[in-house]
Image (cartoon, rainbow, N blue to C red; front, side, top):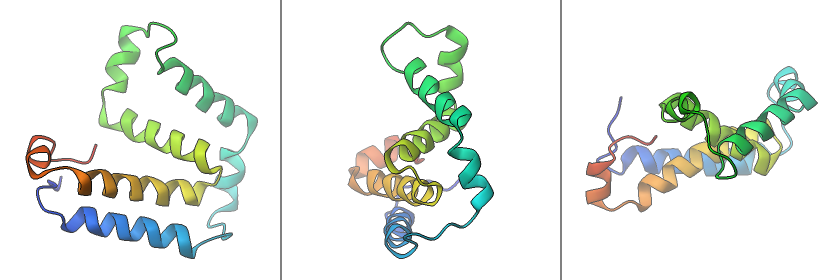
Length: 118
């Protein structure tokens, strides 16, 4: 895993995310994935995940331990991005842009303390 102590990779991520959002407008890379993600089942599942991870109720301990994993953090970032954009491709580019910007605005001490993006 690449540590984010320098600003090279966060700058690349930010650039790729921004360029992707601007240049692919209206282009659907994979119609099957887009149709699946926009199905009522998947949308409902995303809503339930977001509800269970909020402060509305006390989450079970197994869910808390799962949400502490890198996979779960990545999944939640993608879910929030998809809810914000409604488009699979925009979700990917927006997530990359967000991760790059977050790492860019961290101070040098914060980058040493949190060397990975997620």
